[in-house]
Length: 309
Image (cartoon, rainbow, N blue to C red; front, side, top):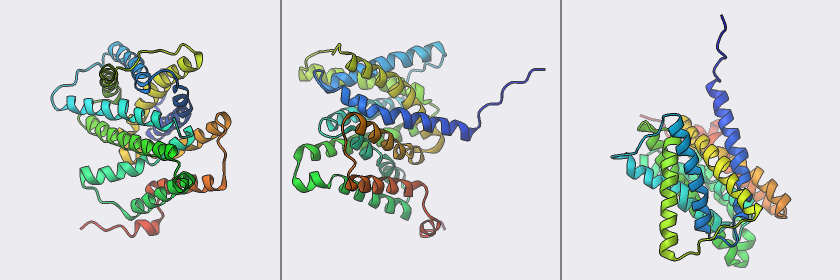
């Protein structure tokens, strides 16, 4: 009798999801940069998530998983759409106007620190010593990385840093909302589809109110980057990442964000001429070490955590 192939182990599935997130999101930063130009930022994001939402809804309908959010689920889905599929990317596309794409990715890698802080605020979880130490190192790394701009008062770059930090905070809020929705029995693919639709509608409403010019760049660089952001960057990577949030929790899932700045900075060095100075290497190293401390703290630091009664 033929036997069914063994299902992939939980560890193997988690590793696969991490690899997808790191490789795809590590390469989407340069695609975000290619979206800048004649099309308003808000409309580029709306085009991206309109396409991604259409694909998600088609797949959900085909697989008979389509559900309509109602009751207490609806405001959470709308808030997730606002945080993950509109404001988050508005902030990062504005950040990319003055920051190298790899630097924006390094700022985004602080998402796990924000997740830990939000878990403290929203759920009352204690901030362990290794989380505090990691936060301090991560902040020090960002200061070192951006010290030339901060010292010389380069307002454009400082503004880009502020946009990137705000975008990371929006992303972390979306993480918390996704974890809440999954605890209520909703799958990431289901909430992503409705969230992407909500984010698209919010951006379209803003574009109408603000009187933005409706344009679509027909150059292959714009259309190619739009397709890459919509399909691998949104449909695949967001589903993989938020599945990790459901499996591991927001704090551990965000560990993937520690790894993809390496991919992003390597691409930035190739295509944007980003220069690896000793200060930049030190800053990135401190930022990543701070993130690693959150998830791989040494035993002596764990021993300092207050014991439960």
